[in-house]
Image (tube, rainbow, N blue to C red; front, side):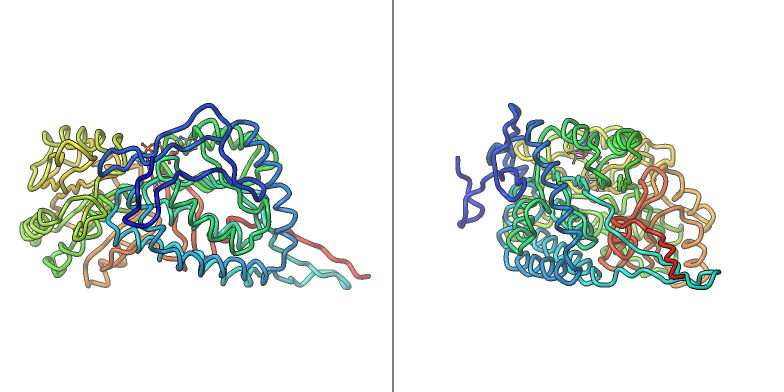
Length: 485
Ligand code: NAD
C-alpha cells in the first residue's frame, strides 16, 4: 500500500526506536492509520510488545547515565541542531501531519514552526539551569542548592497537535538532562516520528530518545510500573489523566498532567465587536476546534451581544471546510470517527438548550467533516457548557455585569485558558484576578508561548510545560551542606 504525501514521498507508518535502532513492534496488535479526510487506510502501525517495552526501559536507563553526564552546552548543541533539522523537514512533516490528522496544510506548517520555536527556547535555556549558594549560619560551611535532571521520563502526547505536544515534552526533558520514552498517539504517528528523527540525527546518544507505540493502556501501565521511570508527562483527557495519577501513586512518580479545558471568552461592550468576533472565529475553528485551549464558551455583554452573534456566525459560515491538502481549505475534518460521533451527539443534545445560528450538520458522508457550528442563547445549564466540546462548536450567551461574567466563566470543572476583550484596566484586573484558570489572554487569542508556563487548575490538571516552570518540571532540587572546617 502506498499513499503519496502530495507528489513526493509515500506515507509509511513509523517503526519503534529503541536503544538507538529502529525496529518493528513485536506485539500481536497493530492499528490502521487513517486519513480523516478520506477514511482511507494509510498504513498499519506495529505495536510494542512487553519485551520491546522492557528493552526501552533498559535503554532509557542507559541513556540517562550518558545524557546527565553530558555538559549542558553539548546538550544544547544537539537540541539546536535538531531544531535546524526540524525546520529543514518542515514541508515533509507538515504533509504527513495533514494526511494523518486532517488539519489544513498551512496550519500543519505553522505547527512545525511552533514546535521548532518551543524546543529552541528550551535548548537556549539548557545552559541557564542555575543553582544557588546560601549563607550558612556556621563558619566554614556553604549551603548549596543544585538542580539535577529528575531521571528517565515517560512522555505521552495526543493526536490533536501531535508535533507540538510531543516536541515540547521532548525539548524540556532533553534540555534538563533527562532521557525519555516517548509514546505519541497511534493515530498520528508518522509526523511525530519524523520530528523525533530530527533530534536523533542531530546526535542524541543511543537510549536518550526512545519511541514506542502500542495499546495506550498497556504501554502506560507497563512502563509506569517500572522503577526506571521517574517522571510522567501526559496530555489528553481527564479520565485517562486520573487513571495515570493512580498508576503513578505507588511509585510516587512526578507527574505533569494537561487535561484539556473549556475556555471562556468574555467580551465587554467597549470591545471592537466586529474585529474581535472575526479574530475569535479563527481561534475557535483552528484545527477544527480540537485544541485544549480553544475558546469554547463565549460570554458577551448585552450591548455588544446581537452584533457579536451576527458577525461571528457570518464569519464562521464562510469558512471553507475540506481536505486539508486542498488549496484554500480553512477547516479540515475532525481527526477521527470518535470525534465526529461525539460532536454530532453534542450538537443534537444542545439544540434543546440554545439556538443554532449556523452549521449543525455533518458535511458529506465520507471523511469526518462537520460544519463550523454556532449556538446562541445557550442555557448555562446545558451539558455542552460543562463538557469540553473538543470540536467545531461555539456556545454564545449574553451577560450583564462583570460579576455575572465571572460566575458563568468559572462554572465548569476545567480551568485552562481564558480570553478577555476590553480596554478597561479595572475590568482587566478584575478578570485576571477572579478567573480560575491557568492563563488569561487580554485582547489576544494567544495563551501558550515558548517563554511562558502553560498549565491548568482543577480538572485541567497540574504542572507546567514551556517556560522556566516547564524546564523545572524535569529537574529536582538537591540541597548540599558543604562543610570546609
Ligand atoms: P481518550 O481519552 O481515549 O484518549 C486521549 C489521549 O490519551 C489519546 O492520545 C490516547 O492515545 C491517550 N490514552 C488513552 N488511554 C491511555 C492510557 N491508559 N495511557 C496512556 N495514554 C492513553 O480520548 P480520545 O477519544 O482520544 O480524545 C477525546 C478526549 O480527549 C477529548 O474530548 C479531549 O477532552 C481529550 N483530549 C485532550 C487533549 C489535550 O490537548 N488536552 C488532546 C487530545 C484529547
